[in-house]
View 1 (cartoon, rainbow over the protein chains, first blue to last red):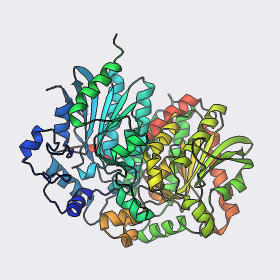
View 2: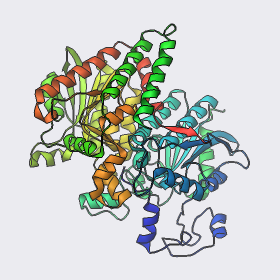
View 3: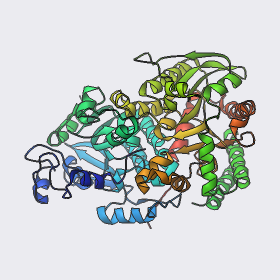
Length: 277
Length: 316
């Protein structure tokens, strides 16, 4: 997988902007509470800022209905991986910075009164990369959804597989795909919401297998990101390369749903798939 | 996890399976044999140093290494290559077809690299577009319909990272190729015969039995890609490879592959015929073990096998 866990930092350098509350699209600057109140959408131009996992859950689940599952799972370091720093140190730092145990949170919830299973990724935790824990959590969520006969709603934001777990992280592709297939064989449904960015190993596995797939406006949805495509092929990239809008045009997603409309949209899907008469 | 830990875990699994032997049927004893075989291979395999791992990377990419069609020529009779994804194009980076393997009809799918500059370009260095994976899926569906076992040979640096590939749905196609393999009810045996690079490799590697040649590599990213990102210098590829351990011995230790296929002395490039014979023997052994199992049981076990991959722990 080619997408860097460091992308977050690089983007800042590329833009010459270091403040996460400055809109990369129109340059407007906001206080954190302003962005919090607007679902992290730029009131000026509609740019969707990255959304942290707790905020995302609050924006989708009915109040006080989310019950987290498998919160205690943590990555081991099966390879004793060491690049410029040990993997264990990076993990500890990510946990400290984000307050999360891993890049994905799963649990049961009600959405517009409909029971569902939620899996939500957070790009702030090591670039939302998928290692053993993310794969395990997602698979458990599929099992939980099948057991309770409720649809699974997946929200992804990921740079791809986590390099520090080597081949084990690549194996999370077949693992999560197998879990989705088990869910489908049990009669379950899955809706995939692709937030910025949904790339590489996550796009090449469970995220692309939803019964319905929607994207957030402006999200990068690509197996290989623009920088690597440009470097490898020297091709001229279209301006909207890999963006949600381009993916819609080429037929890879069902709709682009702006954040304020996401909950009602998913509520409608849950009603349609509920088999109630 | 060290090799010793892994050995300990395997031994525990064997002990657990042994204690079940009064209850279990043939499939348990087969698992037992398999784990026992893994233990023996692990005990025989020396712990590789960074340099040895890099040697493996070099051999896996050796320009004289046998490719998919070299093996097809030697181990499959009555080969009929099939072309095109019935949708848009035929991708020469993946070959697919039907043939007879030790007397039975099989469907075979594999990445194909080129030998000289012209052919390398034609085969796109074994890096397939979505069209290639759609062709692979078409042949696998055909095999499922007619109850032909599926063999896949994996040899790619990765799926092609190009503008058209993205526009034609590279990510989603790889996802659906994984998914199709999780659905098949015919036996599937895969072997990594060179480079097993990222999602483009695993997309045709979701098999009942996964083999790996002695000097093949299987990894989440190329050593150069990993080095460029984590070390910010593609020149550190050797260090990256030593860190993420893509060699066969480590893949066996981690339970990613079921067995290692031996190569002729010095590597498969030294003797195509012997390499092919050794490969055919390993495939035959795995295939004959699983081909009489009911399809739905196979599928269930296949998914359960991948479902169990990963190393994690509850927080203490």
